[in-house]
Every structure is written in structure tokens, then in C-alpha cells.
Image (tube, rainbow, N blue to C red; front, side, top):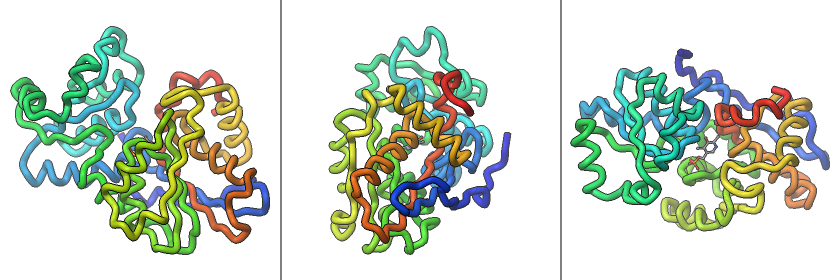
Length: 298
Ligand SMILES: *Cc1c(COP(=O)(O)O)cnc(C)c1O
């Protein structure tokens, strides 16, 4: 497996941007093929905390296509830890999809629960039962959404120069958005793009973890969901293929393609001032393209 090397992360300028605007892209996707993008930053302080507490099993949660589960499985192996993944939905167990197959390959023990039980995942009793089964574990919430994760995501923010006026990022749990915003100057705007229907609720989730001074600098969009989380339309895949042909940068269908599509739509709507200097964060997640590979030119 590749070694984690944060020097692989670069900022690149897009070649083909309309309206004479300038867009750069922070390539967190180049970090690692599996522990890709923002997931590594959120995991790192959690892995360090587990090791410090001498707890050698990481237990975490996710859906059957979760980038967080696969990143945790690979990172745990790399850092000499065991891992347990609690997977939402009993149906996922019948035939393992490529993501879960890979989790298993990295040594993750998979524990399938019904959607109903999955909702209890923060309850003390549920977590105690799991530890009775798998031994004492360091528990990381779904999406790496704890204070360790937010602190780790601040390291993404530290990679962003203060010369950018607008920073764009895709939002799942909002953990990365919080970490990044905490490191921006008050002259910089963060635009979050939610890839699911009715993602607006994430605004309050994110605000909870921010000092009030940052709130006016944050805006969340949820209209570019293409039918919902993990859903797509031919228009989105066309966009991904065209983006790749112009820029040679692969996007993932679940998160970064929807963000980039939204950014280009905002440009068409003249949302950005002429002098805007835009940075888009490529949060990785390319393993999520497995199911649509035959439609993509990359
Ligand atoms: C998980 C993920 C996100 C969402 O990150 P949050 O910190 O949960 O908001 C965005 N992009 C990609 C590619 C991801 O895998």
C-alpha cells in the first residue's frame, strides 16, 4: 500500500474557466489511492488519540458505499490497528459491494445492522454491546465527525492561502467545512455544497461548531443533489467527462462532481465578483466511481 505523503497535495489552476474567472483546485485526492482526501485529515488525530490511549481497535460507522469506512480500514492497517466497521442496512451483507469488499481486504471486521438499529449508534448501550463483541474500541462517529476530526480538518484549512476570496468544498457531515472555516481569514468566504436532498439542515450542524464571527462567511447550497445522495443524472456524468477532458482531473460522482457542477452554475449566474479568486477543494473519494466506471472516460 502507498505510504501517506502529504507533500503529494498540490494546488493547481484550472485551464478552462468561463467569464475570465480564476479557479484553483486543492488536490487532496492525490494523497493516497484509498485513504484519500479529507478522510485522512479527519482520521489522523483520531488514530493518534487511540494509540495514545493504548486502544488498538478502531470502531466506526458508515453506509455500504462509505469513503470513511474504507479509509478507516486502510489507515488502521497501515498504523498497526484493528478495525471494526458498523454498516447500515442488513441488505448490504448479502453481496458485498466493492467498497465493503475492500474494507474486508484491509482487515476490517464488518458488523451489519438494520437501518433501525443504526439510528441507535450513539447510545451507550449499543456501543457497550459492540465492545462486548469486539473488545475495547476507540469509537469514531460516522464520517469522522468528532472534535478530533474537526481539528484534523483544520490542517486542510492551513493549506489554503489567504489570497483566495472564495473557498468551495463538498459537505457530508460538515466536519471538513468546520475545520477549513476555522482557519480562513474573516475576509474569505466558504461555500459548502451538500450532495443530498434537503441538505440545508447541515447549516445548523456546522454552525454549532463555529465561533459566531465565522457565520457570516459561510454559505451552504443544496440544489445540486441530482436526485439525492449517491444518485446521478446523465448531465452530471457528461460534466465529469468534459471536466476530465479539459483538465485531466478526475472527479467523484458522490461529492466533488456535484460541487464543481455547482461552482460552474454559480459562474453562469454571475454569482462571483470579477476579482474573485476561487479555490475548490478536491476532497478525493474517487473509489466511489466504481459503479459508473463504464460511463466515464477515466
Ligand atoms: C466524506 C466526503 C466528503 C464530506 O466530508 P465531511 O467532512 O463529512 O463534510 C466530501 N467529499 C468526499 C470526496 C468525501 O469522501
